[in-house]
Every structure is written in structure tokens, then in C-alpha cells.
Amino acid sequence: MIDLHMHTFYSDGVLVPSELVYRAKYKGYSAMAITDHIDFSNMDFVIPRILKTAKILTENYGITVLPGAELTYVPPKLIKDAAAECRKLGAKVIVVHGETVAETVPPGTNLYAVEAGIDILAHPGHLSFDDAAAAAKNGVNIEITTRKGHSVTNKTVAETALKAGARLVLNTDTHTPENILTAEIIEKTLSESGLPADYYGIMRQNSLEIVSKYI
Image 1: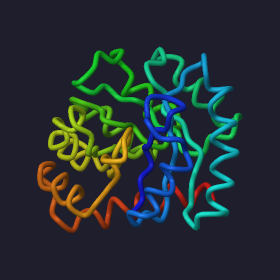
Image 2 (image 1 turned 45 degrees about the horizontal axis):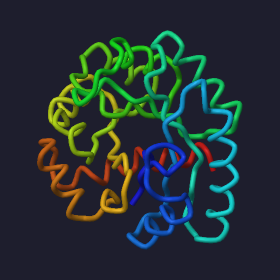
Image 3 (image 1 turned 90 degrees about the vertical axis):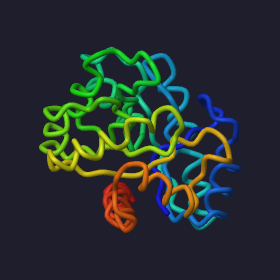
């Protein structure tokens, strides 16, 4: 399994990176990204620490751990600049906290994210066809999420993304050990998203292509 949206205690997760990575490995993960919430206030603190730890854990636990970041509530027009700064600091997988219906995310976040050269637009809520088409054009993956609250629009997100030709990935947005992927969670999420049971293979391949860009 591959999961490219996971949090540690460097933002609002409950585990230190070493425990999160080992628990994921134990559950059968082959690759993952640590993508703690960042903005301009903390990216220079969080990313170098995740970068260092990801290297240590990849070398010692036999699982590919990519340092990443989830740009969260960044003013939409500044997302591109923020993503570029994260890259300079060493972040590989760049996720943007999309316009989920569970929170009051700044309008325009989805559009500016898919135009900013990021990797994944997370939990985009009521994803528009135009934004999905821009994601497809720019090679940005759209997230189907297992996380409660954010997942209520998964079916609409899947339908819109596929109609626009955008690629889907499955992520957990893990904050606690119980969020880590299992076969049961995958099956349930696919079913509720209106996707066929074997579609996880396609989403996993999309995630693998992101991983392959950065290792």
C-alpha cells in the first residue's frame, strides 16, 4: 500500500514520525509521505526535520518515506510561491488542503493549487469540472480520502475527476494509528465513492508514479 498524506506531531497528528512509519510498515505499506500542515510560519522548521527523519527511517525500516508538506489555508494566490519554497527546503510530495465541505477553506484554493505545480489536491469538496480539468492538464492528482468528514464528497469528486480525465489517488490523511490503511478501509472507501472494487490498483499506480519521481 502507498499513502501520500499522513500527519505526525509536527502538526496535528498524535505520533512521532518513527512510530507512524513503523506502524505503516507493519500494516503492509511499501511507501508513504509525511505531509504535516504548513504555511509560511513553520515550513522552515518542519520540513528540514521531516527530511532528516525520512532519510533515517527509509534506511532502517525498509519502507520508502518521502518528506512532504500539506499547504494549509495559505492565501490562494500565494500557493504557488509557498509550494516553490517547500521544494527549496527539501519537501518532495506537495499536498494542498483543498476546499473540503468539513471546513471553511478559502475559496479559490482548489484552482490555485492545481495551477501551482503541486502533486496532490487533497479532499477538494465540491470539485468543479473546470478545476478537475486544470488538474488533468497540469498533472495534479485528485485525492479520494478515507478521512471522516472530508470523505462525504468522495463520490462527487470521483465522478468529476474521471469525467475531466484527472487522475485519482487514495490517501488516509492519517492523524491517529486507527486511520492507517487496511484492506477493509480501502474496500469501504471505494464502495462509498462509487468506484469498482479493483480501482485501487489504478490509484496505487498513480501514487507509485509520484513516488518514483522523487526517489
